[in-house]
Length: 447
Picture 1 (tube, helix red, strand yellow):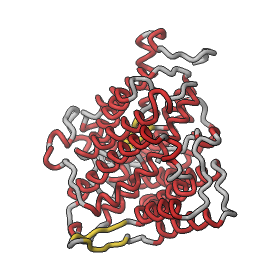
Picture 2 (cartoon, helix red, strand yellow):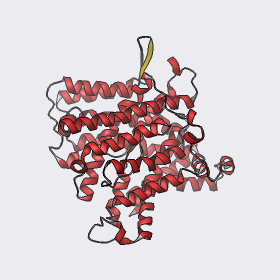
Picture 3 (cartoon, rainbow, N blue to C red):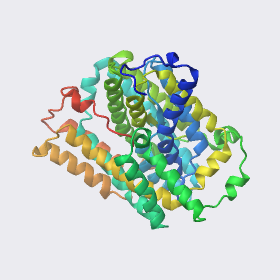
Picture 4 (cartoon, rainbow, N blue to C red):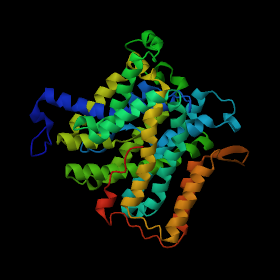
């Protein structure tokens, strides 16, 4: 669209154009949203996270978010990549109650941790409402969040190599398409490079007969999500170890949320941090995440891709984003569609992961650089150093007993706890959220 003035009420375009704009938003989020269950189902994790359930709660979570924010914020909520490290850690846990536990049950405990992570959003929302965003963010400066994000990407790197090694040339095809679309693509092509990389490489895989369509042929066109068909098998379970694995990751996703809200505000020209308020957007994201985790879905997060669509289309009406949410809900009722997605060769997943996991760590670096963290300051250097060593060094986690219960902390959980504690204890914290809007408003990316 080429209009000079942005459109804030899409009804003036007519229903057909509104439907197309909603479809564009769905395509923007689609590749990344379905990639989360694809990765979690891979042999490197592996946990049986459902594509249908993921799409269902992406759509439903977005609608809940819009209700919580008084229908004012044009944001889409899709599955969060920040929690991939947590899923990987849960899949690898083999101590205490997790010894010889079936993957499906491990997923239930992982989802219990996601529920708690969603509730942490509500805690932060309450703190923001009571004491103000500036005081809360003093405990979560870029010197803490940046290195944690870096660790998330680096911890996932071995799984990318393992998947890609099943067929290197096919993985390179996926990587090449993503790179070309992202660097030289125009318009919508530049917005959805991950989706195009998956689709393009999948077509090549079909042509070279590397795809098994058996499950696709057997799947029905219409069917309910697993949490409806087998409700008892998908309800979250709670354990201290699982909570300590998953919940601390909410620190990174909450920082992403704040960055995305700032970016959307800057794009649309309205201060959504003030009206409807950051506390309301956090509540919407938190409820959507807890609701998904409760019945077997991944954590949700605000999506930067859809902010890119807002820039591209200059249509700022939240109604078109809600249309995309409805499309996602409709697709979630098709097992055949989920089976097509599930037939992706591991090499394609590896190729996409090569780019994606590296970008997660790069976003952490960007977070540090854009906020001008001074590493000539010994305080900052020590905090970042401890976080990085804890996040990467405790590869098997740390297991200990409390009151007869076995508790396991993953490297990421240890890193988050150590970073927040050191930042609170060591003197000289000079970070002030909002001091430079150009930095705090930066879109921290999607993990």
